Amino acid sequence: MLDVARRMARHASTEIDYRARIARAQRAIEARLDAPPVPAELAELAGFSLHHFHRVFRGVVGESVEEHARRLRLERAARRLRASELPVVQIALEAGYGSHEAFTRAFRDLFGMPPSRYRGESSLRAVGSIQERAVELRDIAPFDVVVRRHVGSCSMLDEAFGHVFAWAGARGVVPGAARVVGLYHDDPEVTARDRLRSDVGIETSLAPGPASGLERRTIPGGRYAVALHVGPYHTIGSTYLALLGRWAPTTRAELAPEPVIEHYLTPQDTPPDQHRTEVWIRLRS
Image (cartoon, rainbow, N blue to C red):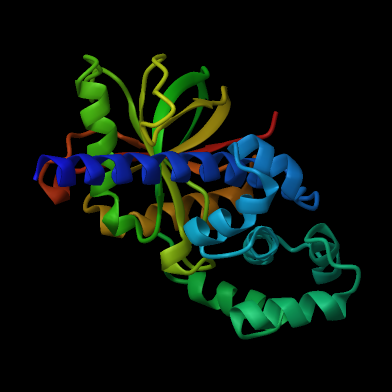
């Protein structure tokens, strides 16, 4: 019985290690999304031989390296279609497509409609949904966090938060005394729910071990647009729409191409209607 438990523990530890190593490769793809991925470099970064890397990546992520990068570029293009008035051909070129036609075919394959129609329907969905929120411009100094990557619906983040809090609590890092944040890379109206990327974490300068399933990241300093959401988390979309759909188009500020950050001000056991969450978006300097 003890041998079975040990084997199960070793298996869980190996799975966490593999996922953490593949996450390093994913972050490298995300950081250089405009450049074609170089599998040999990614394999070295993840600590795998090139022979094994492609299979491990596909097994963990569910896509090949090329498919993953292509989808991320198309989803970024979809967000730009919704949030800007840039010509479709410019967005196509920025997504790595040499022609409007090639971009349209790839876009239709992923989203089921051409880019021009997607832009029009997205605009119609936003009308009437935006609620007024006060937006504060705030200068935030950089700070370190330890995060756990979650892929899937944001309603399923409890396990990731639990993992982070257990690690932090064992080291005396307490939520409330330390900031608790979530970094959200994707738009749920663009990306399929089972592929949404989130990093949830807690502020600390400590470094996690290589097999912990955690990573240390730095929240960049700068000027942020901040909106406060009060109420159940499932209604936070209205605050996102207020910030990105109403406030951003009326200002000359340019949004940094980074994840949206949520800063959780109240404990998890707070009654839903009293939850207070800040939504942060960094502005380009």
